Length: 89
Image (cartoon, rainbow, N blue to C red; front, side, top):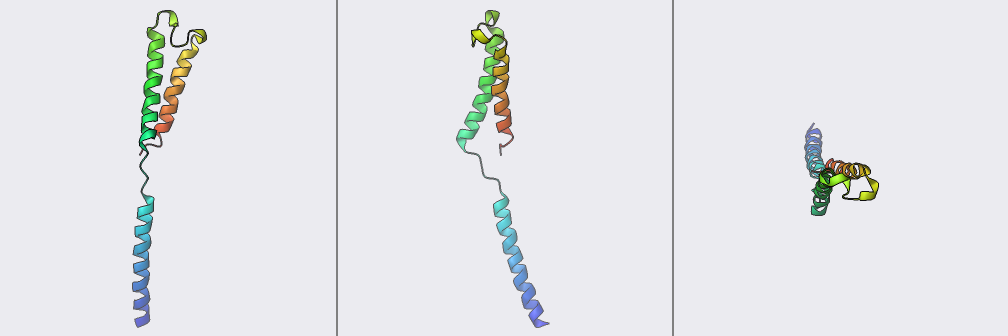
């Protein structure tokens, strides 16, 4: 019976150590600063792209040759920013 107590005590110490290691590994790593800058930059550029298209007379800007596709470009930029936001911690 004495050997059981020693084994139980050793097992509990190992279990506590395992729990501490798992808790340390379970923490998400913070995102680098460049990731956040690119994410917010794409969101802002996409919004500005769409605003410029709607406010420009006749839809001449930002790219006059593609016409209504400027909206798709603006939403595409913003969508990439939103997709990046799913990894934000």
